[in-house]
Image (cartoon, rainbow, N blue to C red; front, side):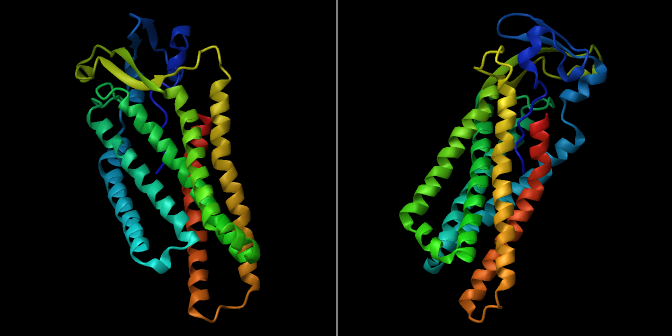
Length: 308
C-alpha cells in the first residue's frame, strides 16, 4: 500500500501566476487572502472527484488490507514477545518493521475518513483541517522506516551468511540498538522534508459548472497544498523528487546486491543437516521472498510519485 501524496491541486502554489492546473482551462482568481477561487469547466470536473475505482479501493479493499495487516503484524509481535528463543537480531529488526507496517496502516486508515467527509471531492479534508496533513506526515515516516528496516534485516542476513565472523561484531546489542535508532531518526528527518511542500491545508472556493448534477458539491474545499517554502524556490520540488528517488533507490539497490550474494553463497553450501541450520535457511529464504514482493509492489507507485 503506497502513500497518497498528490492532491487535485498539485500545482496550487502556482495559481496566482495564472498557470493552468492539470493543463486544464480552469480559471483561478483571488477572491480574498484566505480563499482563492477556482472555476472548473464541466468536462474536467471528474479530475477533482473520486472515481469508482477510488471508491472501491477506499471503502472495500483498504479496510480489508488494514485489518489483515494489523492482525498479522500484531500476531508476529505477540509470538516474538512470548517466545524467548525468537528474540534474535533478525527478529529485532522484523519487530521494528512490523511496528512500522502496523502504524503505517493505522495512519493510512485516515483515507477512509477523508473520503467520508470529502463530499466526493478527491482528498478534500476541509472539515478536518491540518490533521489530514499530519496523517500524511505519519505515512511518510512509517513508509521510510519500513524501507530502512527491510535494508537492515537484509544486511543482517547478508553478513550472517557471507561474512559470519564480521556478523558477530555487528550483532552486539548496543550496535543493533544504535542502528535501529538511526533508522527511526532518518525516517523522521526525511519525512519532514517530504511534507514541507504540503505542510498545511489551504482552502479553495470552487465554482462548479452551473448544472444540476454538480449542485451538491461543496463550495469550499481544502487540500494539503500549503507550503512554507517561498514560490520563487522553484528548485525545491526537484530536490524533493530527487530525495524520493534516493530514498527508494538506495535501499532497492543495496538489498538487490545483498540478496544476489546471499543466493550465490547459499548455492555453494551443502544442505543443512540439523534443525537449527534448516530453520535459519528457511528464515533467509522467507526474507528474500519478502524483499522481492515488497520492492516489486512499490516500484510502480514510487515511479509515479517521482514523475508526477
